Image 1 (spheres, rainbow, N blue to C red):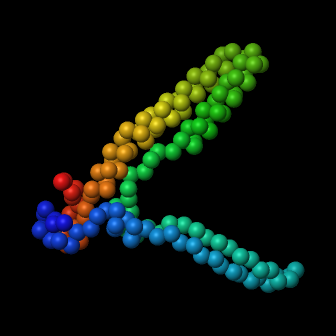
Image 2: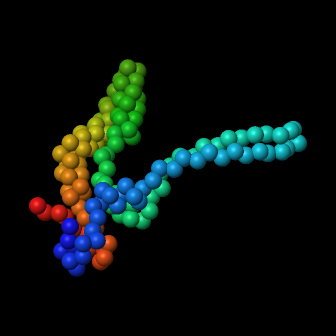
Length: 141
Ligand SMILES: [Zn+2]
């Protein structure tokens, strides 16, 4: 692959750079503590993702999550139906109307994840980075 900007052949796919720039870390630490009540032993585990600057730059597009919207949808419906059940009609309808917001958010995100995201992801897979001049470009076959 040749860089369209400088003609260099030192180019890499975003996918490859991202894989090198992102690493999973697992570490286990053991600690010993001495206090007035005796000796304590503790084991701690940390896990995470280490990202280099290049790894972050070449991050693939992410799908949108639903967790928060589902949470609010359930909460607003729960309160709304609860109030209707207690004959608090105005409050009940108010909270059910509020539930429309997370419901629409879920629909919008589903639409993005099924229609827009696959396109963005395919574009990302075609992206290249020039190690010579730093130019990013799309491989157009
Ligand atoms: Zn270049």
